[in-house]
Length: 112
Image 1 (tube, rainbow, N blue to C red):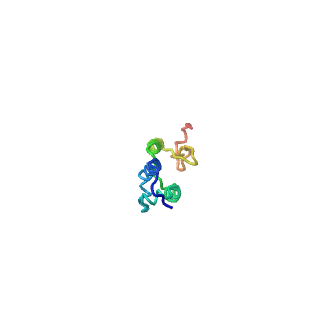
Image 2: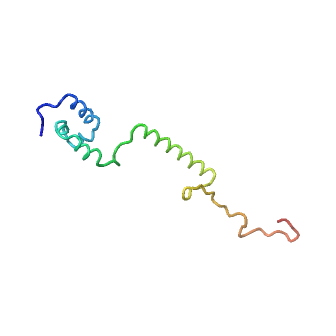
Image 3: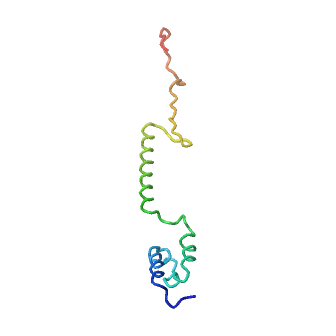
C-alpha cells in the first residue's frame, strides 16, 4: 500500500539509508519500492549476507595493524629458525649433539 505522500522525516530518514547502502540499488530496488517496506528490504538485502559486508574504516585499520604484526612475527621466527605449532613458538631442533658419523679421535685423546 503506497501512501499519497510520505512525511518529510520519513523520506529523509529512509532516503539517507537508501543512499548509504549501494547494495540495495545493485539489487535493482528503486527508492519508491524501498520506501514501501524498507525494513523488509533491509533484512532481505543487507542483513541476509553478513559475511559479504565490507569492513568499516576502524575495522580496516585494526586488520592492517594485525597483518603488519603477523608479518613482523613471521620474520622474527624465520630469523631465529623457529616455527609456530598449535599456537606456541617452537625452536626447530638441530641434531648436532650426537652426530652419526663422528670423526675418529686418536686413541690418546681424552677430550669428551
